Image 1: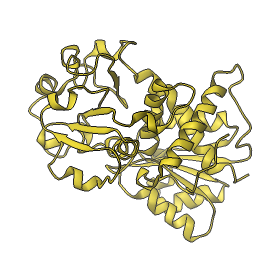
Image 2 (image 1 turned 135 degrees about the vertical axis):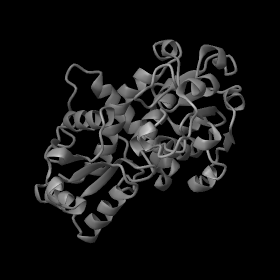
Image 3 (image 1 turned 180 degrees about the horizontal axis):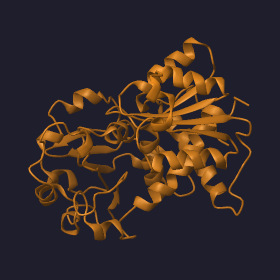
Image 4 (image 1 turned 180 degrees about the vertical axis):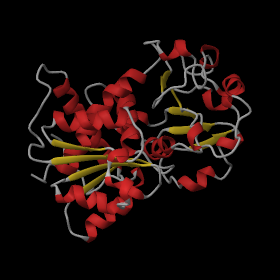
Length: 330
C-alpha cells in the first residue's frame, strides 16, 4: 500500500494537501478499488479501530459510503443521529464528541451545517492529546474534502485506470456550473483541480457566483481559475463538466427567478455539450434535481455520465482516507 507521503493527522481542508499527498490518496484508493472487485470485499487493515460517524446534517451517499468503507476495512463503527441524541437535552457538540472519544473512537467523521465545526473538534482533540483523528465530511459552505477527492479519483481513473495521478489533469479544462456560492463541493474541487494543473471555469448567475468569489478561495495553484456569468465560455472546449445542485435549503434570499429559467440559461443539455470536447464527460456530486441542473437523459447516458462511477469511487476513496489517518491507531 502506498503511504510514502502523508503528513495529515486530520482531513479538514484540501488547502492543506501537497501534490504528493493527492497522489498518495489516489494510489491508495486504486489499491482498495482492486479489493472491492474481489469476491471477499474486506481487509483487516483497521481491525480494532473505532470509526464514529457524527452526522449533524442529513446525508445519504456520504454517510453510507463512510460506513461501508469502515466496514470494508474491518473497523468497528458507531453512528450518531442528532434527533435521538442528547443534543436535544442541551448537550454541546464538543461534549458529544468527547462522549464518543470515551467509548473508544479513534476516528470521527463529522458533517455539520455550520462551517468550522470539524476544525473546532479537531483542535479540542489535539489540545487534550487524544490522538483521535477528525475527517471533515462537509461543513457548511466551507469544504467537502472526500467528495472532491472522489471526483479527482473518478477523472484520473478514466484517464489512466491502472495509475491514477494528478499530472494527468494538467492543461485539462473543467467547467463547474451551478450553485457555486453555497457549494462546499465546488470550493474543495477548486483546490484539488487547480493543484493538479487543470484550468477550472466556474459558471453561474451573478447571484450564485459573486465577483469576489475567487478571493474567498485563494487558490494559488498551477491551474487557472476563471469566473463566468454565462455558461457558453465555461463549456467551450471543456474536457469535463461538473454540474452542481441548486441548494434551495441554504438560500435565504430570492436568488433565482424560477427553476425553469435557470435550466434554460444554465442547465446542461445535449445541445450545450456541443460546445465541449467530443469526448466530454459529466459529473454531479448528487443528489440531482433532474431537469433543472441537468437533463434527465444525460444523467442516464453511460457514454457521457460519470455520476454512477463517482458513487462507486466514493467507497474506495473513503477507505483510502480512513486507512491513511487510521493505520497507526491499532
